[in-house]
Length: 432
Image 1: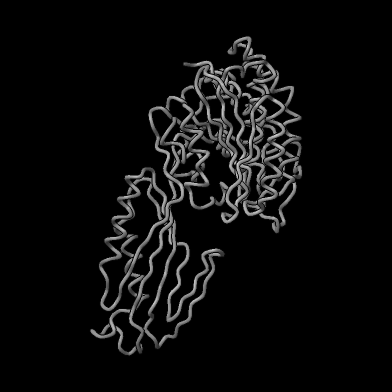
Image 2 (image 1 turned 90 degrees about the vertical axis):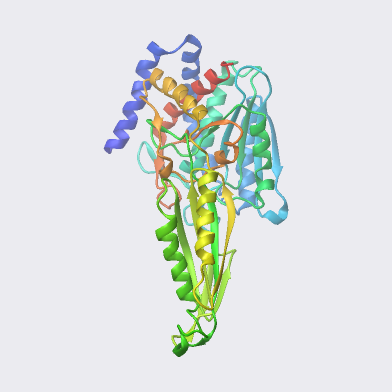
């Protein structure tokens, strides 16, 4: 067993040995319920992992959703499946809710889809050793969904959900968000507007970290037109610089003049240039034709932009537009942007939530919980609701290799993380 798994096992042991000294009588009962249900939770995880739910496999996503729906029905939640329009090519979302006015109103966020589509060779849950399983989507993020379910089950089993408003929102398209966003994220945003706090259960970065901020994500595209001509005339007044030189100038300008702000990054992901250019948006594939003795008349580049605030995003976009407009002779360029995920800023309310989680973790003997570096986390559904509620994310399972055929989930950590979640929810719904 490697050192990190030994550490995880030690953390679980500490949570068992120290909780009796730190927790109230009710909280001890919650912990005992989590322990009692842990083997069922792992079996449930294996069951849902073995149902393929790649984002584009709408039938599989809904099938996983129905398994969770039945489980939430069993613990007294009102559940519904929200279909997306057929033309969107996405399955929809699962919403489960309890009603009440006690304490904080909570929104618990997960997603049912994975990056592994039906044709992926990586399809099944398989134990590696007594604590680690290879599991497509088990870490990102069906394991987080299971933590939500079994934390709520522990509270339900002890009669502690009465008169509390808790909304569980498991989206079906987090890995490839349906467009337009005002439709695909409408129900999530509406749930946030009825809540005080949102907790996200994306992959945990360890017992000692939680996420108080996430960068937003935006797409960008530059299209350049040049004058097609014999290459012997390039740089002349009549022929100009051509599309590829102009694109090179623009990208260099982005690199030198836009780069530099903390937590702002941008990446050109695909570049095509030549006499003729074709690009298929659906497959993100393309081709180009050109000859060394012909000045290129077309170039395109597509990329992504990551930012920590809307203000930072707009500053970057303004600089990119300015650079693209300062064209070389006989060329023109347009730059366009598409919104994907907004930013989740590190607000005071988010930091206060981190403090509550830290207290829970210390009371469980699991150690201090710190804010994770937002520059090392991708975008997530919690970002869509950060404008409306205080947020905390990264509360899901621990593992490695997410989005790869080597994805693993550490089963030894599920019990401890479920305890942490159950007590966090319990304290929040009993706080005015």
